[in-house]
Length: 346
Image 1: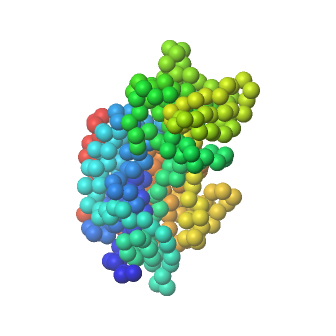
Image 2: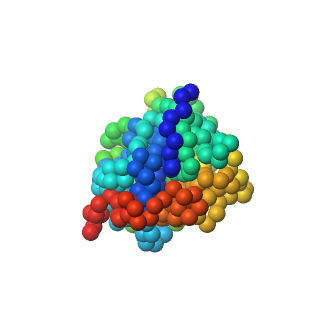
Image 3: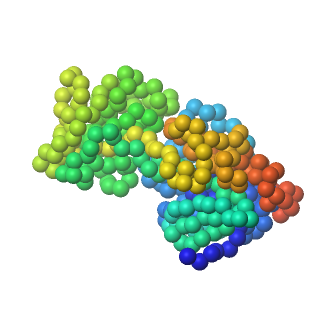
């Protein structure tokens, strides 16, 4: 596989954290052409595009973390389209080179201390590498098997198929599940939400109140303390059976899972990153046990993931440490200033 150019900063993932790192790098004076972003999807911010229905708010601090920006990127609550437009501008202003549809499968250390990154498109060397992939890139699946006969009726997001005038079951109890329910009800579907907990305590107050309002209006059925036991085929539909006697079987056109995501543990461990239990061992600035290798965004927040502001702030914190320890920055040089232009709220 051919060796591509050397870079100062190589970023894996073009979501909010990865884009923020590119912006922070240029603001810190990383040389023009010294920043490379590798993204396995065809566009940046794939998770926002995939998991947020059009015109739904992208909440800057939806996990309850104070939306206090610490770096060069900052947004208020915006629609999906406004958020993507802001991130478009941040990429453009950073001048970073972005290569799409490049999946990284190996990270190693060269004899001279540089990091070697192998992807489907080539081999790259960099003084610093930051992994900024989201945990939702690998949606969590239920513990029970999904029968082959109903796989076409089982979804893990709401963007792959236009759904209207259907009977639907959403399984999950977080913000994504709540947002799916709102979107699907507004699209004219008959929706049931199944959550194993006794109360909707996980969504932010806006989403929780919206779901409860739909329930009061009898536009949404909410089954709390319910656990799907298994699925069965039913003449092109899905028969859902629950583990609790109090919840009768439900026949629907689609079952939509919103169970969160999983940390790509095997990939991180293959790069030599040490773990403390289920989570990677990180410094306060999100450095790993591998010199020059950092994490940012959701990977620093555990299994629950984090907000966009948290993603921006982890990028800022990591970049400060990178500048101090790795000599790739030139504060006061060509970099500096806020990237991405003014936010729509300014």
